[in-house]
Image 1 (cartoon, rainbow, N blue to C red):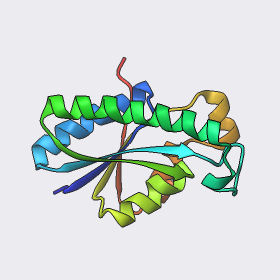
Image 2: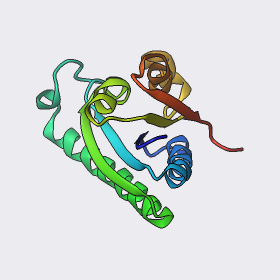
Image 3: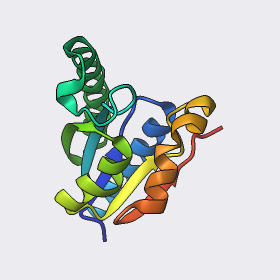
Length: 146
C-alpha cells in the first residue's frame, strides 16, 4: 500500500512520535522510510537561498540536522526498517509538501503535529498545517502521547 513514507524530522518530541508511527507502518507494508531534515534558510534570509545564509549559521544548522538524522537512523535500525536519509535546504513547508514527495515518489507523509512553539506558529505558521492543506500525497499527522 505504501512503498515510500516521508518522515520530516526536526528533533521535536512530535517528530519522534511520527518516526515511531512510520516505523510501524513500514514494517506492516514493507515500506522504505525517507528520513528528511530541512534546514530552513527562509527565517532571516527569505529568498536569498543557501548562498545568502552566513557560513557559520549554515554549519551550525547542518550539524544539528546531522544529529537529528543520526538519531532517526539509530531508531530505524533498531526497528529493522529500510530507509534513506536526506538533509535539504530551503523552505520546509514547500520541500515537505511538494518537492520531496514529487521527486521521490512518496506515497505517505507521516508528520508530527507541530515542532514549533505557539509564538512561532502565530508568526510563521505551522509547517504541519501547511503540509496537510497543500501536500501532493496522503498525510498522517501524529500527536504526542500524553
